[in-house]
Length: 313
Image (cartoon, rainbow, N blue to C red; front, top):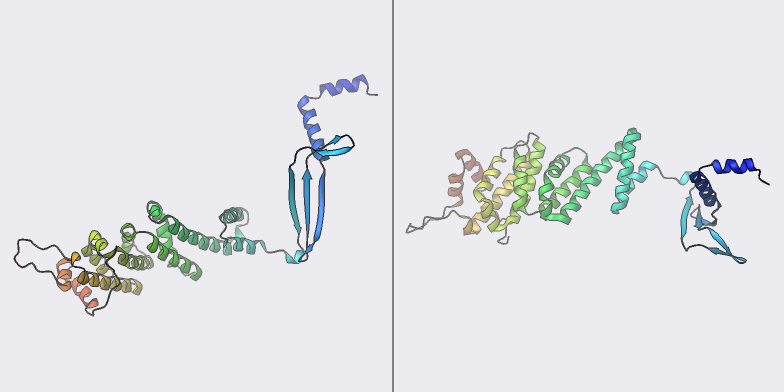
């Protein structure tokens, strides 16, 4: 029988503590059912099911509520455990965006606490990020244009680096960009990079520019200005890298074909003239370029070559 002193001491205990203590005991008393499954592939799996607190109903035990939480635990043999770095690299290639975000958070943890182990993972993160850019270009198209500048400079830079597997995915992302973003919006974004101090960035920008112009069509070229396009292309004919020069030659041949095929691109004539004369390609270049630049353009385009620009916009 409890003494009056003990009862008095019990009254001095705060109610909240008594409640917490009781709650903790209740939690510990909650039953669970443990099932051990057969071994699968040498690994043992165990399923633990936690049940709500039971109450007595006569001579039977009745579960309060229908909620049951099942957690499957896999027991893997030591020699079959994967290296954590290999797992991160594999998960970074996942198409599951939720898993990808979780993996990137794990990479962030590595960068803070285990930076010495991050070298290979960083390259994989870079590659995955570039692949994500390509997916974004496909998904959003022209809607990405206002957010393109920081992405574009990085893609031009990564596509010109020495790491081959990064260069390849960056180049694919740039090609995707020229396909899914309208050239009338993309060309002004590319043009400033023709004056970049890095010759490789200039070359990649020239290649993207050359790929985009044919998608303008005749009406788009007229809107952008064929004279302006010729001036841009001629400025790259003397660039340091052969990739820039080749992209400029390709673009000039395309523009020549378009000019000769679609009269709408020719300069407007004086309507007061009795016999309006359409300028030839040679005359058009000479009237819109400095003498030396015009000669360089005409040397490139002296051999007729069928272009790829269609009349459709």
